[in-house]
Length: 209
Image 1 (cartoon, rainbow, N blue to C red):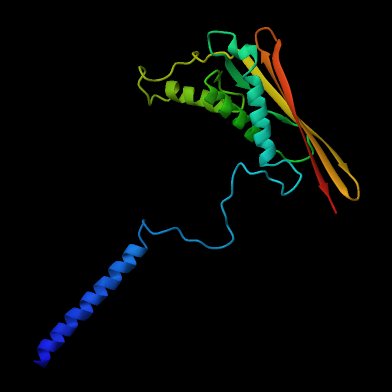
Image 2: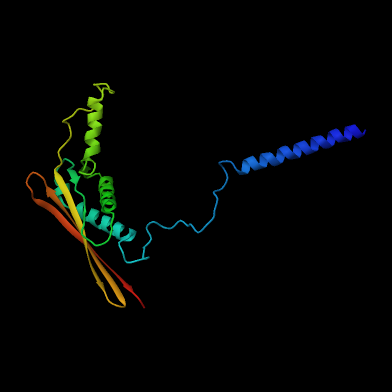
């Protein structure tokens, strides 16, 4: 009788152990909720950012939206039957602070591309990667000749997009004022005629009081 009770008790303990282990495995599996800790929080990427008066995310968004809206109204982009091909030069940073001008350009290009009215040729920043890829397909011997992309087939752009950002900074004991101006222009490459130009101004002021 004692042996029988011991066997029953052993089975109960074994079942309880298996249940606990299964519960632990489930709680640590991929369906578990994400861990939360520290001081990290998600915020609205479109919210107005006023942490400092240096160039920030809100300024980038304002510039990209303003320039895209203005450029899409230009007859140079809408008059022809064929979607114009544009290449982009590096935006020049003429301010005294570090500004990721590539991020501004990328935002403008993304919004213009989504419109479906223009196309973009590889720009000066990516030309090296483009030519290296063509050379790899044609000269490495790794690709079928029937599928490799041929040299000399790149399309010449119709327009060149160039821009710059400058600033004027004024300080007093109580006031820090920063004025930004972002300028952009679209030049017809063959004729050299500027077909569109616009600028966006931003002023940011911080008071010590």
